[in-house]
Image 1: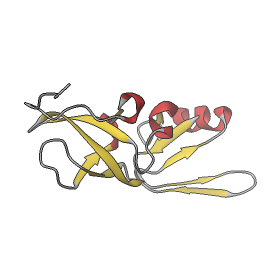
Image 2: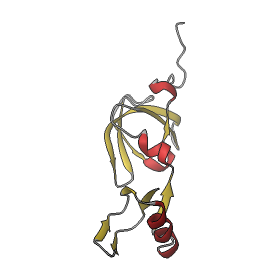
Image 3: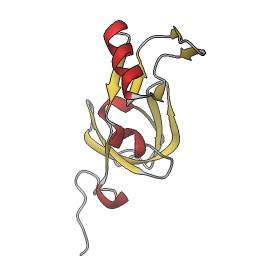
Image 4: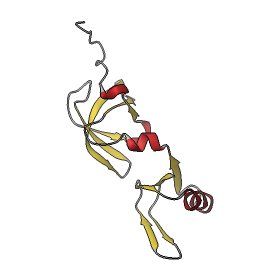
Length: 121
């Protein structure tokens, strides 16, 4: 089960210490993740694995921007501390820093058209 640390955590396990930084995603056993969510309520959350698997550099994603509405772009760098660097922003064409929470994978890895654009097909 994938979890995300919302604050820095140091968890003492029988065989080791598990240190997590805020925003770090980690795949843990279901048992350990369930216990962690119960005991560290508000400090960790469960993350949908389909979202995590698709957050690889080169993948096309979309998100809702408070300024531009629905945007798309291509992941330039893997997620770090709950943020992604996205290139080819559908509105600005620039690099953009996007919060992982609102990211959705694009179907078949193809970007949608920017706002106001029309297809030549």
